[in-house]
Image 1 (cartoon, rainbow, N blue to C red):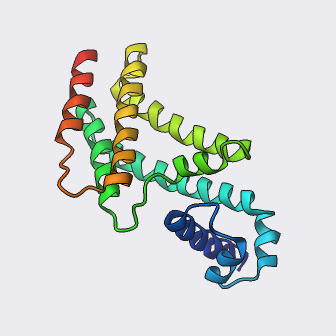
Image 2 (tube, rainbow, N blue to C red):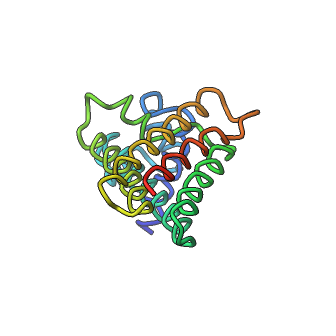
Length: 184
């Protein structure tokens, strides 16, 4: 029962934070949406920062599993990187896509919660390290992974501001493939 309640709260909070951002969403709204009391929220999460941290950890775990599963299917570097790009493009097309919840958490809580900022940094570093491993894990791969990460982050930023309508992402894919070709 406890895990069901916690999961219900995390799902409600993630949905609300994704749709409205972190600061505008109150614990009262999360409790109401989850069908629990505010006291229950405090019991399981301590405070709003605790709730946000748990939501980000949950989202990070989902993200890691999903991306790892997509990458694992391929053996060639370009195929692995293409899988990462394609995963992101599918995400951009999701009806619930509102940009990166990690970047928004950093923007909204950057000066107020080291715990939240630490989760964000770990998430982004994991993605970059995964890209580097897909490329071979050498020093030049780390530099290439950083450039590819910057392109992916730019795609996330661009799509969250302008949407994806009439954007086929071929230009970004070609930039990334050129980076890969330069390290090979």
